[in-house]
Image 1 (tube, one colour):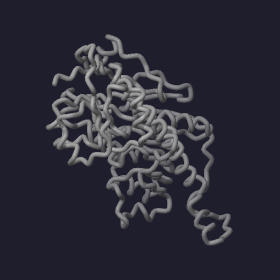
Image 2 (spheres, rainbow, N blue to C red; image 1 turned 30 degrees about the horizontal axis):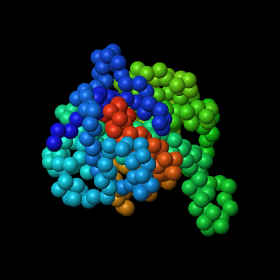
Image 3 (tube, rainbow, N blue to C red; image 1 turned 180 degrees about the horizontal axis):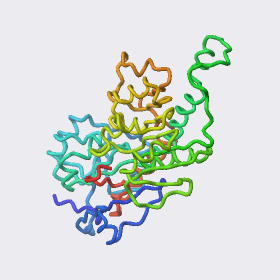
Image 4 (cartoon, rainbow, N blue to C red; image 1 turned 180 degrees about the vertical axis):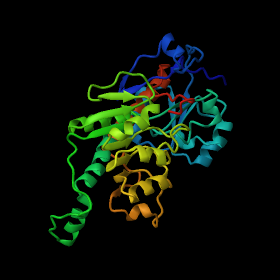
Length: 365
């Protein structure tokens, strides 16, 4: 059966739920934004099949009302899905294994259920442009930014020792005695990766009265609350200016090991590192050395390398480190925003409109 697919599945930016930017024009395409043209939709529309791992009955009904030509297949195991790989035109990334893609001639769309796509973007079908990959970038921003500052405040206000004192019924105003608590107002925050999540972190830093600097690859106009946006190659120049460095870059070949011994040597003595991106962006041995030497006042880590962090790893034992197990995005708001985006993309898939949040396979995000 010949499946006729939506016209112009485009690289579009998702700025907020149910609000999409217009498809890129010719000049945008010349600047490297990806546009994948498809055949025009026939008058008699075929059913488009989408495999999704988890969806409630209410969500299935919502999609049915919005996208009448999309048939959802819910809850298959990976083996069951691979056995039926000839059926779908779209899948969620849970099923995106090399074996599945090899057996899926009609597949044209993978929806990642996260912002990071480092496990999917390198697949041959995505790299060749045969399959369009979309993600959930910007969806997780508010919750992750809140979490980043929760970890940072825990360290800068000496909360771990006071929470331990509470459990023991101990009133001790001296705290840990290792670090003098600091206020964030008047300090400088450097956001490495001013994307959807980085922008939310930057906004909160501004709200705390911080001077906000940032780096990013694009030349988009910076928000008012960011004083300076540098290119990625300016990182070592900007690091010495920052009291707090928040990492929010995707994991790509360019960012793997970005925070190495040279980066930590460039950071201001007594500064703090916050990593809510990917563990492999940071050289763990170099981070440990910077913490043990006192170069860094502390580190806030929602991600680590390796992950999970082994129980006997020395990072667990450092009093100036806060570690959470890759949970920064968890919130009802995140779930609601993710569902709105996914639902809107299914509606667009049915209506032959550009899909939101297409990933550039060359850039890796």
